[in-house]
Image: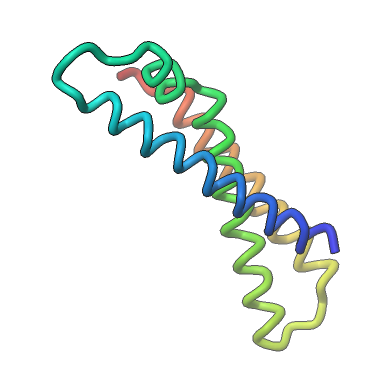
Length: 102
């Protein structure tokens, strides 16, 4: 039940975070003065960190759902396998994101 709720909430979070990224990028593409609030939201590391973590866990729990729909009925081991994979991939992506030099 937790996975089902988390998958739905992370989907809504992804929609909200991507909307913030897209809308602020439109404001930053203007030729005139760029609004400070748009620059602050678009370059905020917390927004990017949440976007990476929510995207990775949403993707891996979606793959878990597909595997269960294909007939694998061992839900508890699948939960731990996909949680471990999601944690590893999210940690690797966050390390790459936070150590970039540009």
